[in-house]
Image (cartoon, rainbow, N blue to C red; front, side, top):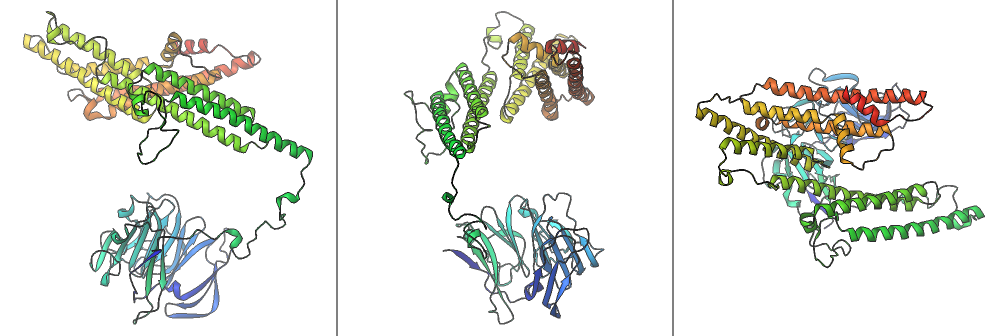
Length: 614
């Protein structure tokens, strides 16, 4: 079945634009009104016997709506303008403008995005479709044709909330009925449903909000159309058609005035003889493509041997010989990520880095050569695949490290009364506090590579902080039982102290010292690049502290005044500002030193240390 036909014949008055002719006049956009279109035929109760030239709107026009006594024009820039008279709100200019002589712009709500790409007019209501796939409506709503869950007229555009979660690709307004086609091929209908003409699964006289046409759910509708049938005994009727199989647009060469070849072009490509230099370029390009493809093939085979970072086989019905190929251990990609050692994953990430670097050098080598468009595309695809696999490995490493801390994997067991060995409860709680604090610092220092592991890191940090607060509270409870002085607010203050300690550790100077002491092999092309990296790393760590405080229900203690937390957050923001200021000062200082030293770069370590101490 190639199309759906529904709604039968609708014997009601339909928009006047169907009974009058419009001839568009194309002109350039100016600040003054242009020759917009010619108009003739039946317009309401009038008959225009001679073509009338409309000169109202500046710029080009994509479409117009002709009402009984008004016109709405869709401009090339996606704005709507209207003029004329309408008492039910079709002008879209508000209740104070129901009659205007000159075109006025129709304003949309503040949440409006994009531009209008289509506008439809029913009997007395208007629908507009935006480039973001959202629908707006205004005008008469006696039959619910605006889709706003009521029968109140609207004098300005209002978003159809029922369709906000969908991407609408086409709209239709037919008399008192409205239709919308979504990107998933589902048709929604609302408005006048007398005699069941909306073709829904019920016979309510009016439908106030969009409802899916479930009888067509088994097929994907590609396009909607309305056709005049003239079969109604009460007047001209209309039939709605929903195309299931819709032909592709007509090719340029098949359109009226189309040609197989560009005007003035050769009928055959081989009629043009090649000179020696052109032939040399072609053969060099072919040879270069062969060599690059051989290199890429070797890299790809090495990539498959690395195995780690490959996509998961989440579709059992689809088989990929290369992706599903298993080694002798018969392990899947999921099993490798779950059980292989972290050192092996780090080694795989390093090998992927080497492959990316090799492909990048190859790309730089052929960048200036002719005829290498396909080769560049192939190398770019290979590099993207390697980068995606490397990112997947990094996410796996970060997630597994966090999982290990979450599961309590540590060299020292958590102290408890069973293995106390005669120690007092205070000693046990102190050991627990020390272990939790160390774990918290370790978790917050782990490097994350994506949003998932960062959220997991923040959540795990909040859990450890809550556990620390509980341990501190237990210590205060023990003191109270002994008759010593106890402070119920002290646990919350200690958590704030932990965050304060972390904030001080996340300065640019401390991060630089950690990189130097740990011997991290991070290389930079310039001092500017190194300083920018340290600043972004420091800001990212500080943002973690700020983000934790935003979950106030979990992260804040009820007995601690909110001012304490706000002061800590304010200090974190100030530290970020200081980082930015410090980076600018360092760059300015370095620029002056370069001028005085004839372009020689100053020592980056000395710059960071001297300003970091300040």
